Length: 301
View 1 (cartoon, rainbow, N blue to C red):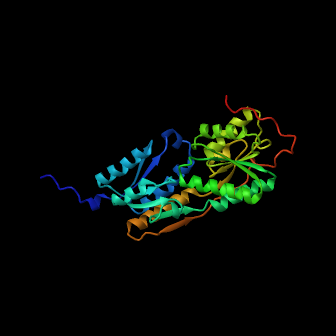
View 2: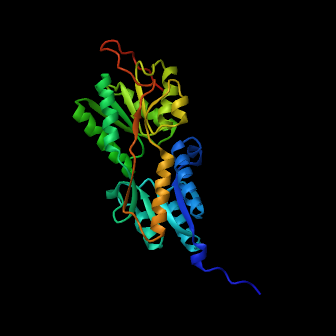
View 3: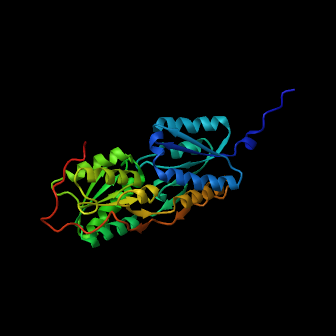
């Protein structure tokens, strides 16, 4: 006799995470490997399997949730990179019956449990630090501006620059090394280019640090660099990169705790994770005095 299949309630125990990223980029981006480490450790301690799906675009991500719902094996999902405008994933996971937690500001995922990290105060710290070094022109190499957290960081960056009485320029990139270098090229082509840059991740900052000296631009003598999120990559770059450091493994643990509570029908509406802290290393210093700035050559090979 063929045994009857187990009821869906017995099978539906896994927690899923869909990452909309090129697989190659995930291999060098420390943030998600650290985040998943903390998330999976917390889930494993409570007997919850972890399922990861990497997809190229939003349509494939939406399809992944539908397939998980059809399989009856995934009970909850963690949502990342919430979109600035209407994010269809938020309503979809509700319709599919998943417990859900978003890594987002509470206003960007209304009526959903969120794990939130304040970016406004750390951005003010970063910009104020550069101002106090003597920089009056700062640039930001941002991630994709479709993401809500990118918009919030950019708003905080521009507000902090205004408070500090310094000029600010922003260029959007895609979190990749090549994209970051291209954004730096555009910033340095400005009529009055910045003397310090704040990057949205470690990969873009490290790529710029590697490309700049070969083009005759000294780091930090000609251009100071500050990364968002510390990593081994930041510490192994020459010079080592100043960074806004946070415990990303602990952030994953917070997300794990939040989704476990949601699965237990006791959701915590807002879980606040510790904000990034400034770590000063060799990639930031005072700018050259006026009249002594070197001519900036193209970063393109």
